[in-house]
Length: 184
Image 1 (tube, rainbow, N blue to C red):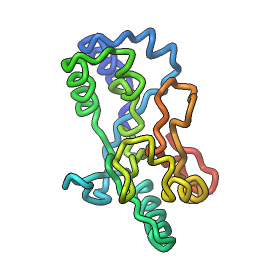
Image 2: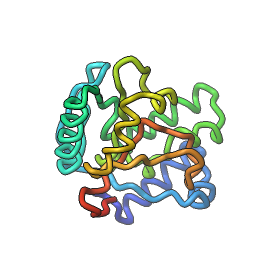
Image 3: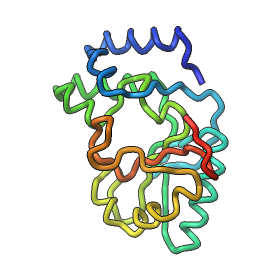
Image 4: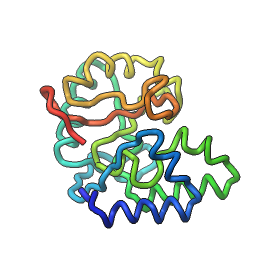
């Protein structure tokens, strides 16, 4: 993963180009997230796009998805790896649509700070619930994840009132390693 001085300069340049105040980003304590280079396609999402994860996270995802299916639940990836450039374009599109930076940064990480860059984060959907919506927290799939995801190394990144100031995202889970190992 890229996290060297060049990457840090790239983050600063993207923030400046987007008008994102670096001092506010640093004040939130957001960790820099390097960009994965080794990726595996894990599935095609609901929109027909290939979704990828880092190999270790992909293997854990497949095991977790199979266990959920055995329990009668469907889990689907709606967002996996997201490049630095893709994150930049997401933020730019929201700015151009007239959204306030303060609102954008509650739901979207600045380029260089998204767990999706690492190839370890996955946004999960389940049949019968629209993706990227808080009602996911009321599904059987979410309840199952709350009980079982840690077994596969996945953890809810942004619970209510999280330290980073992000909105509650019950669909966003990050692979941190199985058996107590810590990643990323």
